[in-house]
Length: 451
Ligand SMILES: NC(=O)c1ccc[n+]([C@@H]2O[C@H](COP(=O)([O-])OP(=O)(O)OC[C@H]3O[C@@H](n4cnc5c(N)ncnc54)[C@H](O)[C@@H]3O)[C@@H](O)[C@H]2O)c1
Image: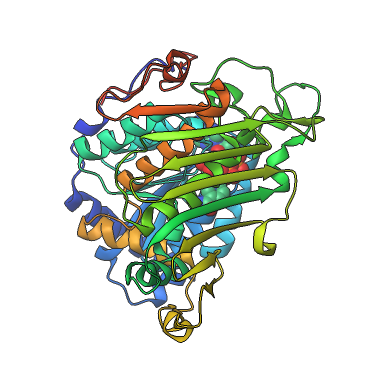
């Protein structure tokens, strides 16, 4: 396998929307004849079906694929995973659930050469998002990329630049942007009914944040292309506690709770005031204080404070435990003059500051479509693939909040205490160790994509 070969010719392969629709139409009819398909009952014209491929099928990638297929507006034509057991298992599940038999790939570069694919779901670990998303766009595909947008500040910038250069639709997997709870809440906060918003506290306390139990290195499991799993990350012997799912706790592949949940919840703070600017003043610390028998580099105990123009945002994470403020393991608390709101993905509650706060008015802002965040987010992606409009969680929204989250890890990893960010220079002011974490080193012949 030549990992140095960059697929920069893909965007020149003459793939057009017209040829997609034609292929879509033919494929649809063939599949329809072959089995009892959920979407066959929707009455959708085949021209409205979007053909998707997925990279990384074990957990969230497959979950997103299912949501997209459940809309009745898409077909799966390709699945890719570097673990053959995962790939075969998910392909069999898909066949059973939908009757579909997509083409299967180990190497995403081969998958992206497939002109049938209109949109790609990126469900790989974070250290792969940049290469998978940028090359998918270069090949003319729209992209649903999981959060955090990428595993470093620079890679986030590259994905955003690629979306602009190639004119592709990008939905970032922060599904809360499409959900009822948060949309109703944002409308209420922005109505001004509670007066000024002074502070937003976000917290994520999860047992999994302590990492997996430590285990010895072993041989690479049969059927796993470990070189292609590592990709741009440094060479390592195989260790299960750094592999499927557990990669989150190691800097080479992920950013711990800070980026895993940080992008979901900090985004709910930024959205409350429609903040599109990058953070400028941040302070924070991170430490590993418990569960030292677990396998992780990321922090179990971490706090970050963002100084905004007219309010404060605060982040707290506690890995290894599940209890948190208001009996919630995660949540967002909005402290306003007229009362405090506490929200999670299920609901939000107003704690009025005084009797004059109208709690019934707040209730009236609640949206209750009965549809899940993922259902709404998947449908919004497909709407935008067809209309070419900006999705609910655009690449810029995903990029900006990922920077907020990455800054927390830069602070903790360097022990800087506080940092100022120069958005024009894309540099931390006067802090070489922090600046050293902006651009990742790529290994195994992979290069940061030229966008
Ligand atoms: N939006 C959400 O609520 C949500 C929830 C969970 C995970 N996620 C995100 O989804 C992504 C995946 O997380 P996960 O929990 O599914 O991880 P996972 O480790 O369970 O699955 C990742 C899959 O990607 C495969 N893979 C790795 N490198 C690959 C490559 N080069 N080509 C093809 N396949 C490759 C792995 O073999 C594995 O099957 C992460 O970015 C994560 O943050 C988002």
